[in-house]
Length: 115
Image (cartoon, rainbow, N blue to C red):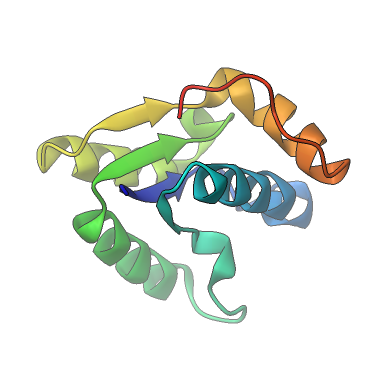
């Protein structure tokens, strides 16, 4: 079991990109990983509070999975930089994000993926 943190865009995304985060969390969990999903945090906190919590999760992760669009997210870029500084392996799931999200919406098992 690997502890994986999911990083990706939230701010400015429809529904905060929750469907993609939740689908990736479900997919990784079915592969036997423990998943830390920042979209499971409660609403209403400041961006600073979210980043504090998320960086703590990255600190305890054994890998980081990047969702599609991470390049346009200041928060995801900060999480990635922190993970790299700590030597935490990174899984770029950019090409798999849409497929995994669509499968989750249809309650189907993805047939491809890097995890």
